[in-house]
Image (tube, rainbow, N blue to C red; front, side, top):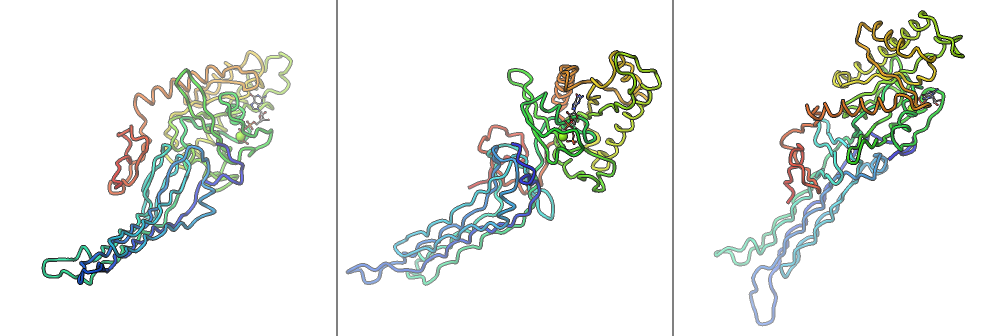
Length: 392
Ligand SMILES: Nc1nc2c(ncn2[C@@H]2O[C@H](COP(=O)(O)OP(=O)(O)OP(=O)(O)O)[C@@H](O)[C@H]2O)c(=O)[nH]1
Ligand SMILES: [Mg+2]
């Protein structure tokens, strides 16, 4: 699920050409002692379709990048003795779950579940053989119809990971480390910015049945929305989440000289809190520049690396944050190193997600009505918008 940096591809263009239908055949029965056999020209075979199918084992669109043009075969022509031509084989392109399909005009489909399919280009129908053209007045029709051309299309495929929770924050805030504490994921962790270059997913087990998917993404910095650092394109991977966990690491410099049990003075706490509020606002601005929908998501603010805050003043620090932000910033503190606060965060995530499920934070994709050409092999959820199956 976590491909290496170079193989993580989340945006590709794809051209598909379905196969043409085979032509109908003109032929007449030739049998011994039957001077004038009737028409027996078979129909042409159907051209191959091109489908896209969501595959839970894939985490990247790299295969599509290497094969940006897909052509299905045409149907064979009909033959004498009423033989129908063979159908062109369908081609199924596998894509990761969470692939959004669009074209220049807009969104077409969203493959959110394993096995869900989208008919990208339908093969042409086979033409009719001359047997179909016989009438009472024309018993020997010298007519057949050609196969229909296959459809073609140009598509944009965009992977938007499917996760319940997104971890956001400045580089080095401790996002990836937290992911390793909450889930079995093993992202890269290092004491320098931009360690994470592509999103990582992890699954947090909440109980016997409850599983929460968490997406860890690269750090945001000032100007990310204008392309600074790694830019903000990776924010597409938290667009579908219901909840953001916004992590802020305290600046240890603010508490310098207070180590060894010595309680920092009120001024040090105020300075530390003011730096943390700045960091929070900076990331909030970048989220807002990306999209208001993203900025409106529920947010749990977490002060990470609480082991760096001297003993006994975490509560004071959190209170200073709330005060300095005019009451807007309410946070909890945790340390991935000591494990302190992790249980509290799990409970807070659980409570927020439970609330969202009740109000059904519909991040559902609503496709144009006419384009519902997807099918779902696990067809047990009639509520999803794209699950009607006009497949023949
Ligand atoms: N003391 C302490 N250090 C931590 C804690 N959590 C993470 N770190 C350290 O902080 C550094 C950055 O951690 P990462 O998890 O890579 O941070 P990140 O937010 O994923 O960083 P980017 O991927 O660059 O955005 C690493 O050296 C971690 O070991 C913590 O709770 N306490
Ligand atoms: Mg990271």
